[in-house]
Every structure is written in structure tokens, then in C-alpha cells.
Image (cartoon, rainbow, N blue to C red; front, side, top):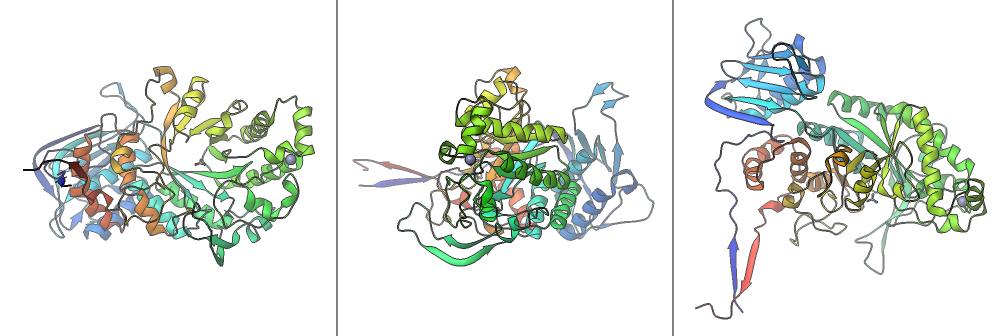
Length: 536
Ligand code: ACM
Ligand code: ZN
């Protein structure tokens, strides 16, 4: 047997494509460059103070460029424009900005967020070396395609500090993501302080053991060590405020009725059988879930009350996934709720449960979003669906006139392996290489235009059963997040080869500058292996 191995080259391109990721809607390069060397002056009275501070900080830290204070002609001139531009009578898209680099740099922006996007694009246009920085003369015209550009992080299975979360958010914002889905509660740990129910964090935030290796490996073994942590409400406020300064909305997730073992370890009276069980150190799906009796519903609504006060974004995620109905089936309280409310079965009971939360959130001026299982038994009137089991749930919800965020496990589960190389750290399974993420389209194939209007955007999820440190989170998230944002931002996205060229030639260095532990799996050569009977 003979093996013929061909290495597929990917570095043979030298096209003038935008160095900015996500690729702007328009990028035109012209002859020449403007030197910015050691000093710039920009009119910071005309941009929000947090953006001015961010811009000065980034220029100084990564390029050693200082903002000059004297009132000379600005190197960079910022101009705020209204969405309906009087001079052209053209309505500009939401969060539109433009950058014109010629003898000086002119940035026009239409919202605070778009000013921030423009500044991040500008930073990505800088080339050269210390003391000899320059920007090529060019024109950038840009605005986002989708309004929901998200990354999710599970802090229950493994916990990450406030500083680590801030770094995660910061990285998102460099690449124009705008939604951080903070998965704050799950079976293996409750991570948010709730003042009315202190045992949620005193008991629910800690487990006594954690399974070792993959959970499918038998016999199972455990590290016997207390593991956990939680965010105080002051810390949550600090993260929310930080995210706001980076134009990132935070969607908190409070899981129900399933994935609730950590809460029930602290308050077993809100389960069906009232039995006290510990916070589990094993991954998977558990049969013990919240009971649907009134006391449990009021308990959760009390929790949501505090959550609502902490998070200004309009959406609250209530989970809704993977809730086995076995306990409800044999619980007299749950069966009574079914009878009293004229429900058919336990699926309709779940729908009733979610509807109670939907009504509660609506009254508080919030919107409910949940995983696609909330379709089962009938979707609640105002619910938005996060489609994770492929695109089926998203299609169904959109056809019913509900908003949808697409996060299919086929293209958006960043806890999956990104190469088949043996050096990859242990992961849950699956296979999601960079190119597959690049081929994701939030609008499912064959969806009609009317339904497509209900697709708010997309999101990747980072479940952390097998991800134990923030370095590993970054390894799983980058560069795949860059491939993802291309699908959420660009109307016309370049070819994968062009994207790869820009990534390898520009953004690896950029990620190095920002101390990101990105994966190098893309450098593992693709092997094209064939067997020939005769090779001579
Ligand atoms: C999920 O992955 N269980 C939403
Ligand atoms: Zn019950």
C-alpha cells in the first residue's frame, strides 16, 4: 500500500481585499498611505467619552501612538451624521459608518455603536511597525447585516472570573459582536447572587466532585474537590457596565424547568418529590427538574425579578431545553396543574410553565427567549426561539411569526472539535472546522423572504463541560468566531480562501497583540490520501 499525500496550499493569494474582519460592505484601496507614526490628534469632543478613552488606550498600548492635545487640524476627524442624510436624502442603514483615508482620515458615524465599530475598523487598518505606523488610503462603507451577533458562554460547568469575562467581552467587541449570552445557571453550579434566596449561591454554587475525562468513558472516576464560585450582584453590575462601554448587550440565562439541579440542591421543596440531592459533578441530563406547582413558579419569578433589575437588555433567556417529564408524570401537584388548566399532557404543561414566565416578563417590559424545545406543546405568544437542534425549530418558529436566533449545533457549537488531530484537547465530540463555520448561513436553505425577516441573527455556543480555563475558551472560540462574524455582519462575504488569507496575514498578529490563545488547528495540513495499486 502506498500513500500519496498532497498538502493543499492556502497562502498563495495576494489580493487587495479588506484587512478588516468582519469584511466591510465596501472597501476600496487607492494609491498611497497616511503616516501616523507616534502622534495623532482626533476631535474627541465629537465622540462619546468611553470611545475616546478606548481609542486612545488601544493606540497607546498596542502601537505606542499618543493622542496629541494641541488644537491643530485633526489627523482623524469624527463627524456624527443622522440616519437620513440631508445632503443626499438617502436613508442610511442602522449603525452605518464610513471611513475615508486620504490626506487626513474622516470618520462619519450614525450611532454611538457605529462610532465604536468605526474605531475598531480603524485600528485594524493600521500597518507597519513601532514608530512607522501608517494606514493605506482607502474608503470604507459599512453597516451590519444582522442585529443579533452573539457568543454564549457556559459559566456553570466551569467558572470564569469577572476579569476573564471582561476579556471575553472585549475580544467580542473588537470583532463587532454585540450580544453576550451569559449561561449563568445549570445543574452543576448556580452562578448569580439572588438576595432573596441566599442558599442558591451558598449551596448551589459549589459541587463536591467533578467527573474526570469524557462522561461516556466507563467506569467513571471523579476528582473529589470542592469546585465553584459565583458573581455577586455588584460584580454583575460591573460586567454589565463594562459590556455597555463596548456596545455589547448581555442576555442572562436562568435555566428552567430542567438543568436546575443546583437550585434544587439549595431549595428541594421546589422539585416534585422534595428530596434533597447534591449539586452533581457529572455531566448530562437529569430527571429532577422544577415542579410546575404555583410555589415553584413564584420562586422562579422572584429570581427573575432580581435578574431583570440587573440586566438592562430587553431579552431574558429562560433555557427550556432538555427537561425530562418523568417527575411531572408521577407528581400529584403537576397532574393537578394539568387538570386545572385543561392541558393535554406534560408537553403542554411545559408550554404552560413557559407561558407563565412569558406573561411575567412581558409585564416587566422584557422579552422571553428560550431554546427550541419551547416550541413543544405550543409556543408562548411573545417568545423568541433560539434554534440549536439544527434549523428545524428556527424554521417552525419563523413560520409562526416568532423571532428566531439561529444557533444550530451543525455550525455554531464551539465546544466541538475543530480538527481531527490527536493534539486537540478533550472535547464533547462533534467536528466543526473553521471552513464549516464560514459556510454557516443564519437564513436556513429554502426559507421564504417573509419568514427570513424573523431571523434576528446567529450565535455560537461555548458549553464548558470539557473547557476548564479561559485559555481553553479562547482556543475553542478563535479563530472560529471570526468565521462566524463574517456570516452575521457581511452582506457579501469573500471566499473562504480570501478570508483565510486576511486572517493568517493580518489577524493572527492582531490576536497576538491582544493576548488571545487562538487555535492553530488551521495549520494542520489537510491530507488528501489516496491508495493506488500501481504507483510506477
Ligand atoms: C443545548 O445545547 N442543550 C441548548
Ligand atoms: Zn411536580
